[in-house]
Length: 100
Image (tube, rainbow, N blue to C red):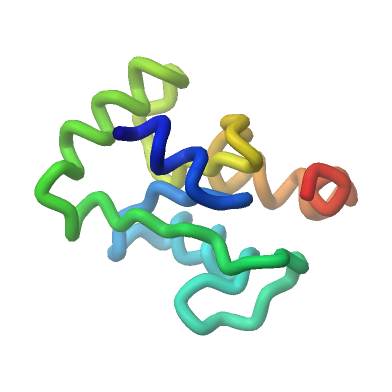
């Protein structure tokens, strides 16, 4: 199921609604009504783990897949790119737009 979620959009963000780092990542991509700093063809797919019945199982699966236990967990075109600080650094360097 997690692989299907990851393949479902150009950008997939596994998040928790109360997480400030997740809010920064979602803002970067224009999720949740924010003005995007990065141009996407379609909005990112955001999975709020704290609002999902399967949230703990999804987070455990992501840990097995990536070794990352924290959120946000960001995937671009099926590739895990890391968390908020990783995505922000990619955006600042200009590499994020090239990935998209």
